[in-house]
Length: 163
Image 1 (cartoon, helix red, strand yellow):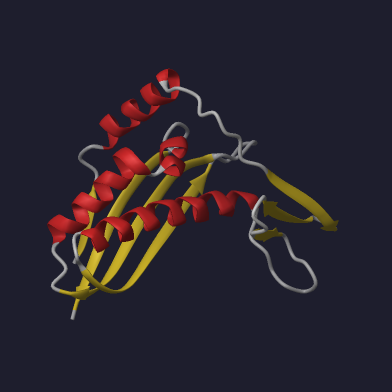
Image 2 (cartoon, rainbow, N blue to C red):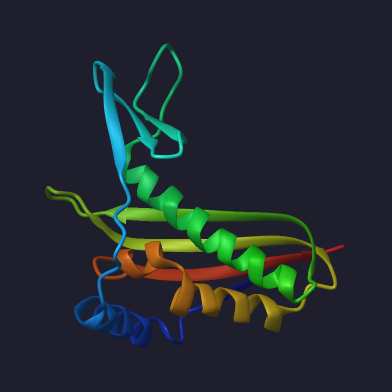
């Protein structure tokens, strides 16, 4: 069974925009350096040495910059939901976050619609626990989602596979 979470999207969008307008600036900056590797390939590195390849490099396919935004959303909300469910002692065996996006037809071709699907496998997973974890991620913790909601309509759903 697939569950859709749509009830509070308009309120979340307003809240996100209010936070962006009135929020205080953090003191620390984060830096990413993208190094050109030839053709249209860039290798992005953070200060700790983690790296992500954009574009094909040495015959290996890469991820496009716009796809990285969707990946960042999947990672951000996925980490939140897993953390919250672990604290609730939910017995997860597997977890996937699938993010789909639709872009504007005209340049700069931003994301206009994004849908996040959470897929959860385990024992006795309760819908209420999953909904609370997703709601907390979307409304409080996931900064990537908060930023993307300023430009795109972001919706979500989840599916539980109890064993």
